[in-house]
Image (cartoon, rainbow, N blue to C red; front, top):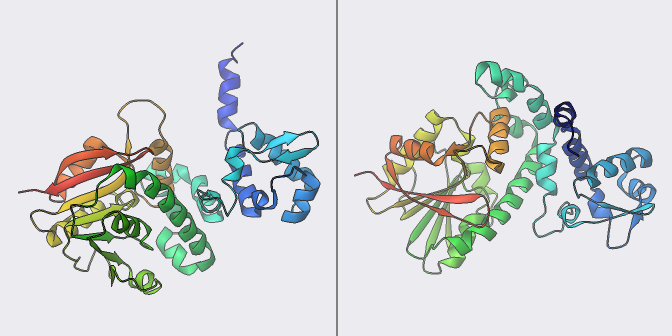
Length: 328
């Protein structure tokens, strides 16, 4: 028997408490303390530094979503809860910690500011913005870096089987962070060499590589290297249209006539169907001032930046490769 509309809406109204429990459990490292044998909440709480009664109540709610499972008086892993372990190959713990961090949660609490102004919610609590906040809070910046590293791992697993990097001699990853995506692309294209372009403090912290040239700079103000392909991996969605177009124009100035632009992003569907980009779009509205975009919006964005949309290559994940070519 279906629930009345009021009861369904009540579930939606209070739905934020389940992910909040997920954030807290990830921060405490509960999944790391739970091995293959069931453990009681008392034992888990002792290992994680939590209150046993409070932890049991959180686990009970998480189990409704398939995260952990009750076995009598004890708890055991599910497929979902195992991905909260730090040692899982597709670990989501760092991502959960980042989304549940104090600054992210506070930004979500200021969503009304975004609704009434159109600007990022975070500016209500951190006027200088998220990137400045991370510069001043290195511990939280490390959690962010770990979350982006985990995201890169998931992206790579979907990207490499779907996209052929072998036609390119020089691949430049713009804003590529630690270079995980570029390393995977080069492994799939043994004849290519790579250029990793990111802020000087980012590239300075990386180990030397025989196939990757590191270049420090700011894509808003410094010239970009010439390359046969440019990767913009989860970069454009961090920015509003004006800044995103400025990034694309910087790439266009460096590109030659046969260059291909590889934009790695989620694409918002035009219809009402559920899609992870719709949630991520609100995350961007809260913390960066950026946005997710439809294929048509990406086509317009690329055109404003000097590129034409050539094709879209889907992957096994929600990630797509939006391929642009220089406008003639």
